[in-house]
Structure formats: C-alpha cells, structure tokens
Length: 183
Image (cartoon, one colour):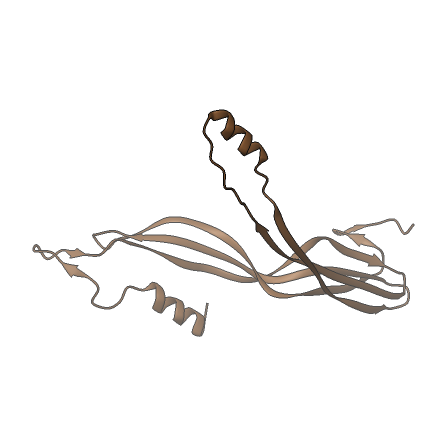
C-alpha cells in the first residue's frame, strides 16, 4: 500500500508514543489490547448470479435491472380488561383474546435499462456486477510484555455502492471459456 491510506492505517494501528510503562525492575509493560492490520487490498468485481446474457450474432442487446423495496408499517394492538376468578376463566379469556393489527404496505420499484449495439457477426455478452474490494486482514494481540502475537487472519469481500454492466464481444457464444452451441 502506498500514499495517504497506508499512512492513515499506520497512524491508527501503531501504539501512541510514550504508551509503554516500566515496572520496578525496568521491564516494559503494555496494556493488553487487540488491533487489526490490513495486509492486502485489491479491487474486485462481484458478479451477480443469473445476470449473464448472450445475444447475437449482430444486432442490439438490451438488459435491465429492477429493484423492489417494501415499506411496511405494522401496529399490533391488545385490549384486555377481564378479571379471572378461576383457571377456567383464565383459559377462556386467553382463547377470546385476539391480537388485532393494522398494516400498511407500500412498494417502490426502481432500476435502469442498458442497450448496446453488437458488431455484425459477433456475439454480445453482458454480466451485472458490483464493484468492491477483497481485503486480507490479520488480528493481533499486544501482551503485557509488549510482544505482538498474531491471533488470526482472514479474507473479507466488501462490496461498494457502485454497480453496473460489464460488456464484451466474442466470435462464438461462450460460457466460462467453453464454446456453446449456436442453436
């Protein structure tokens, strides 16, 4: 990593100057803590399943994405004013006690459409993707003796809010590098 990102990470992951204390024997003592390091950061495309389309040869290709959002307001009411004198009265009142509710639903649809001209004799390919990052990270622990020990490592796929279509052309219809039937 280079630039301001690595400088910001170094500043946040490093212990502050003068944070070490010494005991009576002159040994360093640190406050035990856990911190994280980002070891690798690479951009990545996350392709959505069942959004790959092939069309051609030649002509034009139109694809679209639509999202559905539901806004739901739900209110459950309960009204009970009973005096139970026996266990049977309690059971009967519980059976009678319904939970009426009010519900209001509102659906919102949004999306976009994308059209691309395919060169004559070629096949157009489109696949919907979300841009993001693949992050290799490690968790470290600082002991009371100020030693740093690696606790665990992992990989995180972090999507961003940027998404769109990837378009390319091939001479034959293909999927995962294998030639498909032209029929």
